[in-house]
Amino acid sequence: MKDVYVVDAVRTPFGRYNGSLAPVRPDDLGAHVIRELLARTPQLDPALIGDVYFGNANGAGEENRNVGRMAGLLAGLPTSVPGVTVNRLCASGLEAVIQAARAIALGDVSIALAGGVESMTRAPYVLPKSDRPFPSGNAELYSTTLGWRMVNPRMEPQWTVPLGESAELIADKHAITREQQDAYALASHVKASAAQKNGLIDAEIVPVAVPQRKGDPLVVARDECVRESASLETMAKLKPSFRTASEARWGSPRPEAGGGTVTAGNASPLNDGAAALLLVDEEGLKATGREPLARVTASGVAAIDPHYFGLGPVEAVDRALARAGKGFGDLTTLELNEAFAAQVLGCVAEWPEFDPAILNPRGGAIAIGHPLGASGARLAGSVAHQLKAAGSGTGVATLCIGVGQGLALVLER
Image (tube, rainbow, N blue to C red; front, side, top):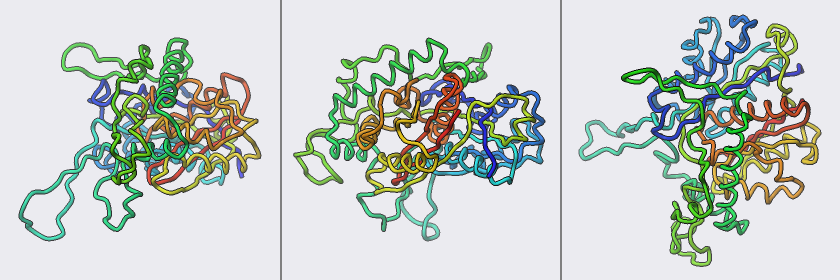
């Protein structure tokens, strides 16, 4: 097996839903990070790239089924460079990185691009086909932005509860209060705001110029959902989004569970964005003429009951660390995607040896944003840049995944 290195990692700022990046197609967002990645490695001949792996969770609209290939062509890669799109829902971007690293380790390719993209703003509505021709009556449109749609009626009902209700179930399981979730969310904004101010993420952010109807393009250079003014007082005023005092698990009365705790303030927002990494083996590294950020060490995937999907990273990280021959005491950073504060706190509760002080040091998805297919690539890139800045160390990137999975990647320097 060959060693695999991360040479560089870039991402767009993450735009808020219907925000500054709303006019930009997802395939153009993907093309943008590919172009910028190559611009930062001018010595590399793009024709040497063996494959492009891109993650995408929706794939129902302008992604055009295979956004990995489309983004590569739009970025100006030679037509001889192939591209593939992978889907592991919220971990699609990390899945792309892992698949690219695996191909390099096996010797299938020497150089690969890996990343992910999602425009949740531009996710279309879909209309299912009828089971019979020329039906009477109305047809239902489904939003592809987030969550369940066209659910198989044979699926276990408890497995298809809304994602936010799943977070409530985790809060119930670990007795996580609304106050704890709000405090965690506030800390995410504080850390992300500090990272912006202090230039800690400048190395990974590539601005996007968005054409305007009149005048110069709008240059988007910062994550749009980071709130410097966030406060516990403001968060406390938000109403629960998924459960009221009289509601409980799967719609059955369960007063002992109390009211809802998951709000718009302690959950990740809807976002648009893209991220990409350049991965190589030893020969590929020579072709880039660059020093790598980090080395890929191991990965782990796990599956659990779908209605507790947010706890998927627990076993995935344990497996990845075991394969890397590491323990929690060896970690210098851990990037865990913040789908919900309750989900993150639930994972931490199940890692008794983990030090939360190294968790998401530059803020997480509650503040930065969670454009589904792009988030896993952002996390992997962030870990790589953090290891480069530290000079040495071991880091983990991990995500929970809807329908009950977790995925993790270990990087070292």
